[in-house]
Image (cartoon, rainbow, N blue to C red; front, side, top):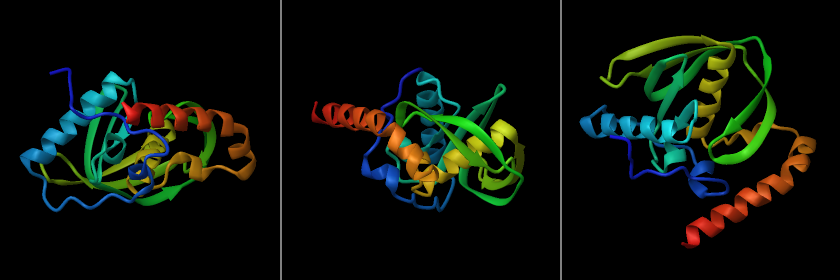
Length: 171
């Protein structure tokens, strides 16, 4: 199955600015949504995808990193340390790359796709991916993490994304 009914939602769609609702129970429907999100992420060559980026008001995140796929339900960062500055991109902000300061190491608590609790310890790039996508389900797009001066520099690109989004939604 290499198709999905889901699509990548782009800036400034409202769902990207809204905190997603908690998943009460991991059901077959939730597992199906996680699988569709993995397909959508792969089709768009992403490293991670939050459910609201796919138009779903749910606290779900999928990540593919070094041949490992994480399918997480209600993930949250419970501990963090250190710092790293890294250039991030985002499927919801095509062609925009921004240097952001993040924690270098995080511990994430979540449920897996079977509903079992797990704790993941991640560092470096994987830690950044977790922070980026958990921010998404908290209604915090990565442009909220940059300085006023960085925002000024990317305004032309943001305006292009905004126009493309409006054009796409009109179709």
